Amino acid sequence: LSPVDSYRKQHEITVTGENIPAPFITFESSGLPPELLRELLSAGFPSPTPIQAQTWPIALQNRDIVAIAKTGSGKTLGYLIPAFTLLRHCRNDPRNGPTVLILAPTRELATQIQNEALRFGRSSRISCTCLYGGAPKGPQLQELERGADIVVATPGRLNDILEMRKIDFQQVSLLVLDEADRMLDMGFEPQIRKIVNEIPPRRQTLMYTATWPNEVRKIANDLLVNPVQVNIGSVD
Ligand code: ADP
Ligand code: MG
Image (cartoon, rainbow, N blue to C red; front, side, top):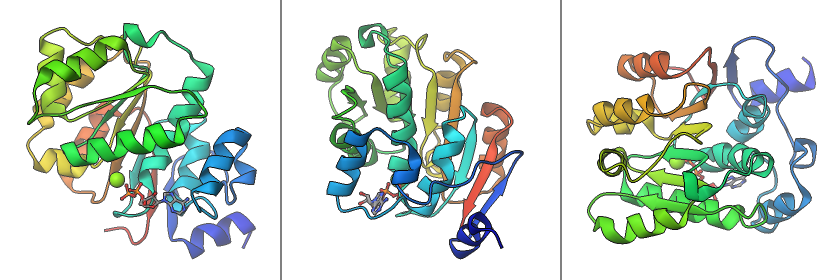
């Protein structure tokens, strides 16, 4: 086996798609900016997790990805690192709307993602705001007006704010659906579809899910263009 094949076998990585780049087995091989590498190393992370190693190089080719991996596999940085790379190259004025939009099922998750984005995005000088239900809209709208490169949102609250015309998606070029299976279980499919309809179609889309039932396959089929599928662990 080649080193790439043996890495994939050892970490139970299966990839479906054409011309799949080799995983970034070490941080050093990833070509990430030195400040970002320093932040990852100082967090005590020895190397990319398998999902990070395999999805980073694919995402950096601007391809759509559906990644199926269980909780705790490091998915958040799996999409945040490509988001930072995009933002380093594409400096839109955040007051005109986000460049990266991340959808997550709950307030807790959205907040965790925002914290991770602020922590590891410091050297990339990103701004990030969070929109979720169960809290007044006012302060969230105020922060949004100040501008954010990355918006992390639950679909219900984001759809409300969209209907109020308080957010513009014309600059969005990366859309992430985190825990897609859970968002569908929570009944967010109509809101997700309304939101995605407002995003320019030339975007890149990354979808993460722990399970791969028919409903998730169907929405992946509708929202992603020719996606590479990456599975970590046994495929159900
Ligand atoms: P998931 O979204 O797949 O459930 P998370 O992104 O929440 O996983 O990551 C799980 C934990 O692993 C977090 O505490 C995160 O900080 C940590 N982590 C992320 N990347 C790495 C890495 N490369 N090495 C070690 N730990 C990591
Ligand atoms: Mg997660």
